[in-house]
Image (cartoon, rainbow, N blue to C red; front, side):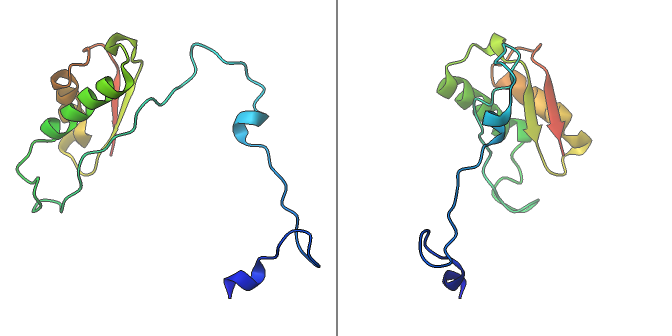
Length: 118
């Protein structure tokens, strides 16, 4: 039934699709050294909460290898990192302490800002 609603361009009653500008092409802003760049997006494994395979594994032991993998994949100088954002679910203290510990265990400088989002 859904296929009946799609018509080939140029046929009777067909709709011609045109390219639309994206936000990147609509922006008139010039590139800057302060532009935000996402260089890596990794995640920890998924398991059942409080009873899965990782129930006895500290969060920082799961997160630190991700930091190391990001450095390895991107070949970026850790001192050049301007900000780290971590998402978590239902961690004590919103995960701020464990994320910060993972930062140290993952060989990232202490002065790189880190934020967690629950």
